[in-house]
Length: 210
Image 1 (cartoon, rainbow, N blue to C red):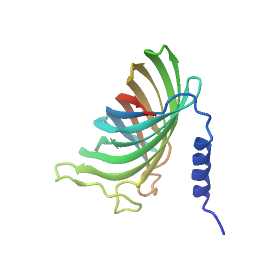
Image 2: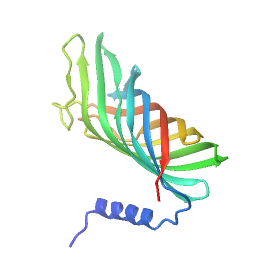
Image 3: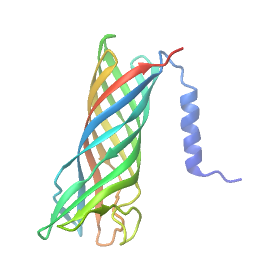
């Protein structure tokens, strides 16, 4: 029986996490923050300058201690991204909403009461909703999929990296999310779109009760 390669990768991740020699308590976090995002746009080799738009993100994460100051932090977020463009004197506004699953490796150092954290890791996001406005026309929901009839692809893959300050279970952090794949619904004319997001977050963490 053939096994889907993606299934094998997921199984490898699960087994790796299950086999970690944990040193410390698992902590659960609630996260809320704001985004400043842009969707880069290139058509026929020409870059179109996007205007940043503001959004929000919220969700949760789990801190799984590995060893010393290293932890693994998987999470699940609702996050809004997007951009505004001026094309031939017509303004286009697009704000996709994603469910995003980031997995970061975190290195923290400092005292029990105050720590500095550095983190980085990949994310996978799936579009679920969003808003598109063309010129003065009425707004409509974003259409996800491939082909001319759609606005953007369902999936986005990228990498997050950033830093945070931890004070007695509260953390404020700043991160940059760099989209790595082309999310344009069709690629004729060398059309390319990618998400780039600056995020500021406030999180609270609670240790699991034994």
